[in-house]
Length: 312
Image (cartoon, rainbow, N blue to C red):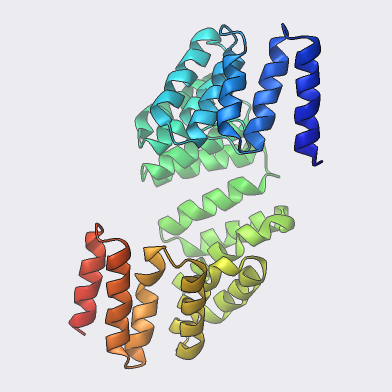
């Protein structure tokens, strides 16, 4: 029996002995949520006291994970209505906090202004929590308000300079602003703060190095990333292509396709078709692009890409 199953068994025993205690149903719902048993988690929420904001919050997060965003939003609003002074519900409604318990509902719905409003409410109610400034910064980044995003990342770092996530997120924004040296500096700081999490940063760091035309360094980082996560082989292939190592690049593009045969993006990879063209394999490049279109005929960009291959 794994730890989740054991925890679930104990929560059921607690409910059996004290079915009137609302907390036990909430705990059970959280455990089921962690086990990805979303339907049962919702059922456990329904068995709780409907005046309890925690029930609405758990239900909202579960619905978010089920991509039922409108219903999730309704339940966040109910959680806020029941406990208007609790900033955790505002941040949950606004943007996902790093961890299990909060949902990026408004952001998933591309309702960034509302997400930002709710982040601001959370900050007003708890101005010392660095997470809220980080969350606000991520929302601003999604809105392409990069300078404001940087300001809020800096505030988050000022409040908690040991959290590697803030440096990593700041680096992403700097990269989008083409400020690659600063981005690189922040990626390195993120890795320094949390070397155990570097597997999530190697490929992003390599992408920044590529944009700086530092391909050999990018390659070293990507090889590290591939060892930790073979799914990144298409990114490695792009770097190999830039180094004119076409056979190796093609091998890695093919590996990525084998791992994701139904994902049209791997067929539509410009690096793959450019590699084939540089190897004078124009017909194969067109065949690959036709497969991308076959798998996703609704994306107009795929047809444009095909046209660019034909015109070469």
